[in-house]
Structure formats: structure tokens, C-alpha cells
Length: 251
Picture 1: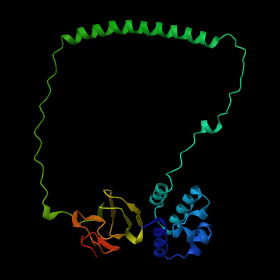
Picture 2 (picture 1 turned 120 degrees about the vertical axis):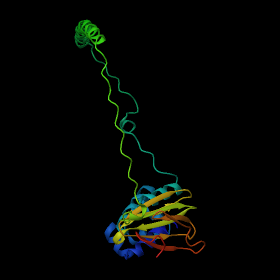
Picture 3 (picture 1 turned 180 degrees about the vertical axis):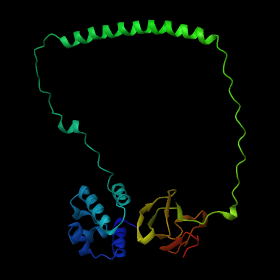
Picture 4 (picture 1 turned 30 degrees about the vertical axis):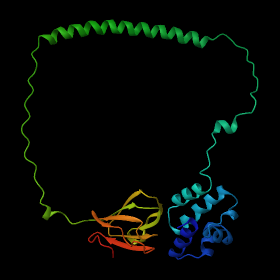
């Protein structure tokens, strides 16, 4: 699905009209309709188009970054940042002459360094004699015996039959091709919405339930609660799936 199709579908699923989105984002309705048709010419440039995508995505409850990344890939890439040095550097250096005075700071630093080096040398000589004396004392002391470690008790094996019941639902997806995916958790909380490319892997968890909308049947391979359930809906268009923590099969 394209960027415009994704925005239009998610807006309708959120139960919002174009007028309501326009009131929340302060973006004109004509611009929103154009964007939902993948026409970004009325946005006033790529910079404003990215901002409009982010504003609309937040209002309808989806993650804007995958859509912005897809927009940049189709419109020449993301803008390069300009460093503060380059922005404020003058084109021509301004000549500046300063009358140089005697560098007393350097002379004081050199004198201080000489004093510090002398103190360190004296300390090394003093500590060296102390260390030699200590070494002669240690040479006549028998080495302490290291006690042998006691054998650790055998580890207790866990009975797989008595394992605790599952407390969450876990869904892992591996993209087999470029496909749009929307994932929601408990109480319809948005977990992910965006485009996955071939080879991409994602994992989501929830306490009770995970619902998915897959743009193309056969586009992903799913593992639910540790069980590989394969590729749902081969060649059957949009797939709507639901999983809970007790049953890995699609509801």
C-alpha cells in the first residue's frame, strides 16, 4: 500500500473524517485529500510534506516514521543537516591584529611543571625503597592454602508438565516481500503500522490479545506463542488476524 492509501485507510479505521483530521492538524482539507491520493504538490515542498505526514499519523494513531522513510526514498532521500559552523562561518576571514605581550602564563606553567616533576621523582624514590623492604618480608612468608570448593548440589530439573500457564501473547513476523502491516494490542493499542521489506523481522507482545492487518496475503510468515503457523492467506489480498495467549491459531 502507498503512503496515501495507508493514511486514508487508517483514518477510516480510526473513525475520523477528513474535516475532523483537518481541525486537529490545522491542515487544509484539500491538502489532506491530495495526500491521501499520493499528491503532495499542495504541501509546499518536501519539508512541509514530512511535517504533514507526521501530524496526520499522530492524529489517526499510527507510527509516522515508516511513512516518512518511504516518502524520503521516493523523493530523493532525507535532507542533510547543516552544521552550526558552516551556517555562521563568514565567507571571508576578517583580519585582526593584536599586540602581543609577554607570555607570563606559559612561564608560570613551565615553572609549576618543574616543581611537580621533582615532587613525583622524590615520591618514587621513597616508595621504591618501601616496596623492596616489603618484598623481602613477603619472601619469607609461606603461601596461604586455598580451600577446595565444595561440590555444588545437583540442579533440580523442571517438570514440563507442571510449567506455569502463559501470561502473554507473543507474535513474531518475517516479511517474505514488501508488505504493509498494522498491529494492535490490548484495547486496540497501536503497536506498529508501516511497511516491511523482504527479510525484515519484528516481534510484539501483549497481555491478552494481538490483532493484525496484513496488506497482502502470503506476504509474511508468522510464529505465534512459539509455534510456526506458516504464511496466512496466500494470494487472498488483505488478511485480518487475531491471536490470544492460549491459542496460536488465527481467530
